[in-house]
Image (cartoon, rainbow, N blue to C red; front, side, top):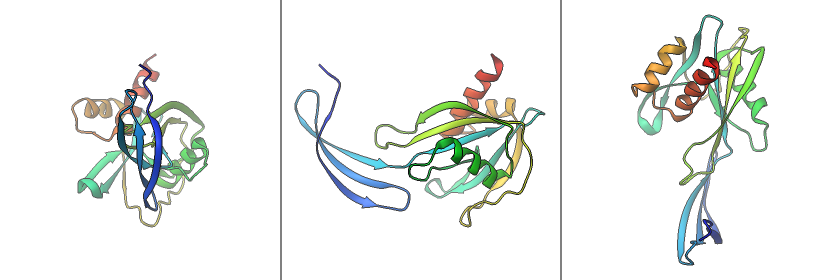
Length: 178
């Protein structure tokens, strides 16, 4: 049996500022009909800004769906059609003020492939030069510097739960330990 689901029809249910939602009618590999709800998102980036002293700049911001402050890496949404490297440079500067001497691509993360097409691209930024941060007008965040080893510990003990941060911290740890 081929593991493929054929789209029979697609109906837009919601068009938003950040996401669109559609209801697809599909044919399963066994020929039976089913439906899929799909949240379409332009994707985004997450950047691990590693300082020469081994600390990482993180941001803390209130995340409405969870009703609490979340610790995460600087990150942001791609504009439709935007190159993810350009987005990473922009978001790093907006949220932290830093510009990197080197920006290493660490791969992509499918955030939740059961219902969304969002792809997050992860970067390691080094050789950081300070500057002015200028978050979006609706973006309120606090910045902090945390040793990379402490971030790994917080990922492993569940203190940090943000998926893009978990993946990027662990990828950077493996990359830097090689």
